[in-house]
Length: 286
Ligand code: ADP
Ligand code: MG
Image (cartoon, rainbow, N blue to C red):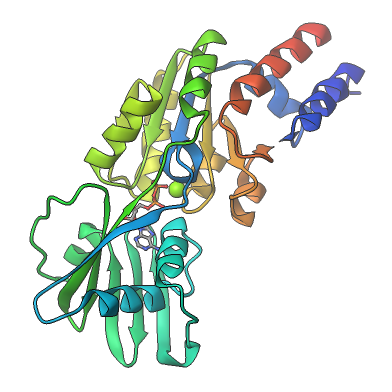
């Protein structure tokens, strides 16, 4: 039988919008000394703004944005949402042939019969598209059509209001190590890391690399590791961590499915709160 106070703990948490899927996760959470965050949608809002559209010679910026919005039509990634929002016109689905998400890279699609790619440098490299190094600041999407680069879209995400406080609260609660993982570029990652104050940052990771990195950190952690993500490309890490915490409001169904704990209001500051509730509950139980 489960002691009554377990329900008190889970119930107390749920009143704060922290949904715990079982009493075993409350116990695991009470022993967390390492918290690993995904960047996009977790420490940042994940609602990117398009800050610039650059066209290569012979192309115009409107066409670059339109091509990208069409290629992103079927993607759930927050980057896709921002490109479609910036385009701000209805999408005629008859113009789109095949469309596929390339996890951690971008998207590929056939638009008006042309092969279109939208994504990072790694996506361009994987498809053999020549692409000069660029010094644009921010998350950069390369847009290619029929095997050549036609332009670039620069997008910027903002750090959540309570992200830095969330890290301070975790330290105050005795968490020893706060780490950020991301598939984004190192310079963007470092800027976010500096703003929020995590101890470590690992950038340009593919979803499978995130799993490996979490396993490596788990090997050296004395106690439990919690991973916090939005589930877009990170459901495998949510499953692998000792405690998987998903952002529920923005997060995908896959995240809510894969997670042990769901934060309904997407506030990272609720993580320290959940740890405190878990410890208090365990203290009553034992
Ligand atoms: P994060 O680790 O920040 O949550 P992801 O693993 O979801 O990011 O994506 C890593 C990178 O892959 C992004 O920064 C972007 O460069 C590229 N990417 C992923 N999905 C898309 C998409 N739908 N459109 C364009 N680029 C994408
Ligand atoms: Mg992500």
